[in-house]
Length: 214
Image (cartoon, rainbow, N blue to C red; front, top):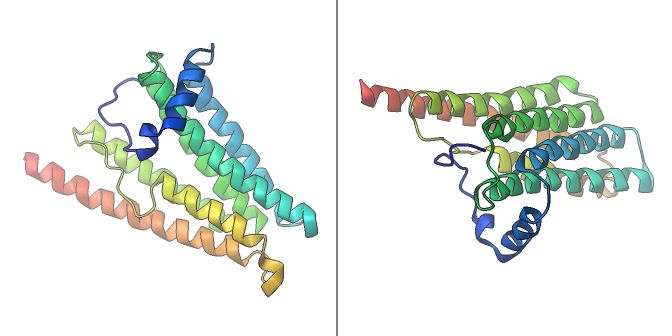
């Protein structure tokens, strides 16, 4: 990570457990960039689990869905600790800004596209992924034009992962109401629609910001 003036506001940074883990990581040879790379590994595992859960049943399906939920949270933990280790641990590097952003875009694609293939609607998964990437693009476009980073929702990164994590857990109960796949499908629709709304909202805020400078 480089410039820290536009860091995503996270209450979890101030928790004791986060600072304790950060101190442990700072004392190792692990770099913030490696933690960022690990987020893509967690995302790939989550995407594979979502995908494979679509054709599994019984205990295997439950295990895959729980693994998908855990990997989504693993991705978020990597996003938390790469910044903490970089800034609070003083391990910033010149190429940090690239590794701070690029893995996030890959992670969104892997998770959401994987979920789409799992429910037999790859186009929905790719649409959700496209809107997720678009929200980040508008934020970075604003930063490039002097606007403070806009992390507004309703479907920012942490919201997307919360929706997909909750859907994975709830989907383990689908046999009760015989609706295999509907929970994940609904989650993808929520992420896709929310992502579009978020991108449009950020566009409006950016346009308003640019007009105030004219």
